[in-house]
Length: 20
Image 1 (cartoon, helix red, strand yellow):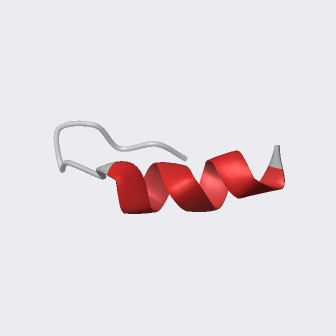
Image 2 (tube, rainbow, N blue to C red):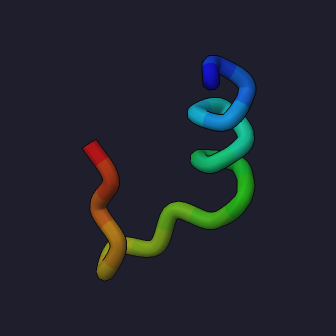
């Protein structure tokens, strides 16, 4: 799931939700 990773960051990367 390469697109998922890129889309995830663009989707919404709140400081309260740090995704490695």
